[in-house]
Image 1: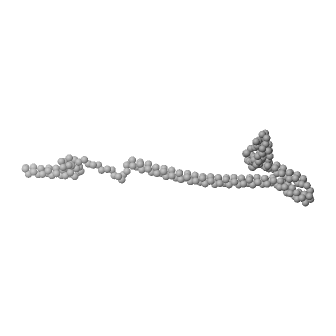
Image 2: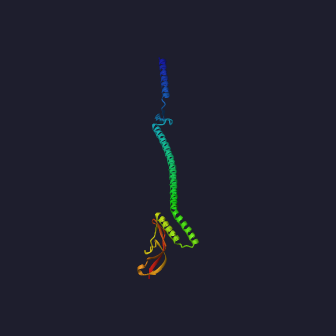
Image 3: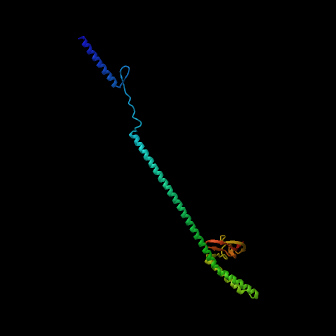
Length: 223
């Protein structure tokens, strides 16, 4: 009977040893030397799998880069249009300036032609006066006819100039005006003639409001 009990205890000891071995194999926990379990440290998530936040930032970065590229494209297009507009404006401005210059030159040329045409009669009369003077000199006659012809020519010439805007400055008997008169001689006079133009040596002229030349005059000065 003691033999049976021995076998039974041996079987039970073997079973317990097998069970302990199984527990040790399956239980991966670690223990201290005193038998206390050591807390397991969780391994970090794999870096290869980005989190949702990282994916969102990457999406925003991509969107920002696309917007920047689109903005740069629009700026480049605007700069190109602006450059073309500048070139077109310059071309139009140059054309307008050239057209104005041509028009001004044509008008000036026409005005010169009109001026010359208006003086042709005067030139013809002067030539006639010279021819008459030559004939009178050969014949020994007086020069009254020549004088009349020259006087008529001078009057015609003055009328032509007045039609163009020329105005003679009235001087004799007027107060001396340094803006219109040039005093070439000063003579003593009575007090009532003080600072008056006594005589005119050369007529002065104005063209519109512009003084072409002052009148050369004699001025009285009371002593």
